[in-house]
Image (cartoon, rainbow, N blue to C red; front, side, top):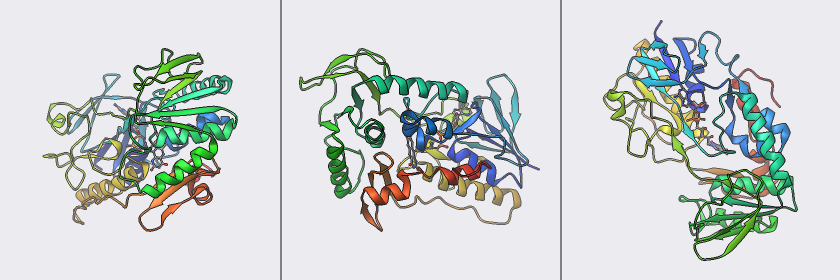
Amino acid sequence: MVDVVVIGGGFGGTAVAKALDDIADVTLVEPRDAFVYNVAALRGLTDPAWTDRMFFPYDRLLRRGSVVRERAVRVDASKIELGSGQRIDADFVVLATGSAYPFPAKTDDDDSADAKARFHAARTRLAAAERVLLLGAGAVGLELAGEITAAWPGKSVTIIDPAQDVLGGAYHPDLRAELHRQLGELGVELILGTGLRADPPSRAGELETFTALTRSGRAIAADIWFRCFGVRPMTDYLAAELSHARRPDGYLEVTPELRLPGQDRVFAVGDLVATSEGKTAKAAGLHADVVAANIRALITGVDELRGYRPGPEGIALPLGPGGGASYSPEVGVLGAEATARLKGADLRISAYREVFGLAPQ
Ligand SMILES: Cc1cc2nc3c(=O)[nH]c(=O)nc-3n(C[C@H](O)[C@H](O)[C@H](O)COP(=O)(O)OP(=O)(O)OC[C@H]3O[C@@H](n4cnc5c(N)ncnc54)[C@H](O)[C@@H]3O)c2cc1C
């Protein structure tokens, strides 16, 4: 059997590993002891039941293959060097190390018990804060404001962003209008078109009253703040021959088959890929389908390789379990009730739990 080494056990990596488990000797390299269902991370901050629910152990993901709890530190086309110094040979390499984002949207704790403790401690501090300041009016900032106001209706929440409107990117104006309307009803204050002169003096997520000044000179007093911007692709481990694919911003150039340019057997999936589409778990899953099919075709020599085509752009943005708005080109804008039904109520967690051999919740 051929050896397929998948580096990174997020949405994209786990899907490729599972899809090739029957036809290859799959090794999934991942430093965490549990998959993190990031989609639920913001509710994981405000609701203790969700903190525990969003970590899925890897032990029932693969039937034949293995999960090696290590970080890849140097990767070339056929050899993976791990943090422990161990080396693994590979016939095919799949790069799936995703992206980092400030807490609470993502956590950098490899141990799920540590990560859970961090969420629980941050929630205790947040619960004690009367005024919350969120830096960034993208999807993460808005969603976090929705979760906070759903959990603690009286709390004052302010979002600030230098952009002129919420949600960067080419979203439909009606979607933005619906979000503005609901945020207004929730009492969330939006300060747009100006940033802070400097970060607040306290650390993000700490309970400490401060006053921050906007560039336009307004003083904002708050008791706690969170950074809701700053995604960073995780690609610094590529050895010389693969590092040519790495752009200055860290994202990886890929061919239509999702291979690194000039490489027959090195593929990439998920947030680290430099495609023009939104960076989503859904896109990572679609990348994984193409990469798994292409590796299978190369192993069996039966099918032609598939080219990746991004799916239609759409978004479902919950504002707490019962609110939010969604958009897709086919359906247009949907309001709170439909968004709650489609996503907000259960954050679509059961479908992913099934992939990991876990009972629905
Ligand atoms: C708050 C929030 C809400 C979101 N909501 C949605 C949503 O509703 N729908 C949606 O489609 N998308 C959503 N997303 C986006 C989605 O989470 C990402 O697009 C998705 O996580 C990308 O998957 P990935 O597999 O590329 O990477 P990740 O999920 O980032 O996984 C990468 C994995 O690689 C591991 N890794 C990193 N470096 C190494 C290394 N050197 N060696 C080995 N392993 C390594 C990491 O530990 C991690 O487990 C949301 C994101 C956030 C933050």
